[in-house]
Image (cartoon, rainbow, N blue to C red; front, side, top):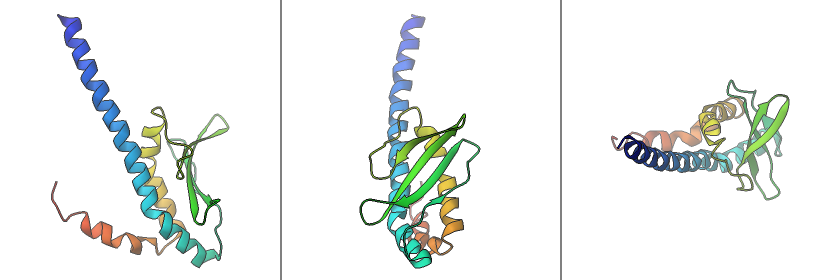
Length: 140
């Protein structure tokens, strides 16, 4: 009986874990994509061109990078820095989607991405105003 209970619990946890990973991937893409156009516009205003901008290495070992894209616009990447190696674990154009192993690290690193935007582009919070105002429109 105990094995049956354990296996049912495992099934439920696997399903919740899978749903949570999907949600984290969606939230990563959503936060990055909300900011792609404003980043591009502010970068052109500030530098006259797209420049490579990187965050400091976070406590989690992640580093965010904003760089030129092959298409008009910018590319956002998240790297995992460990043991002297740099492993790209997320790319905004979809060429590198977060694996289940790395998605929690990248998701946990989203505040570092926002901090990079705030420090590099001081006017970007103005672009967030409508979303921040709407955040409390409906109580959870």
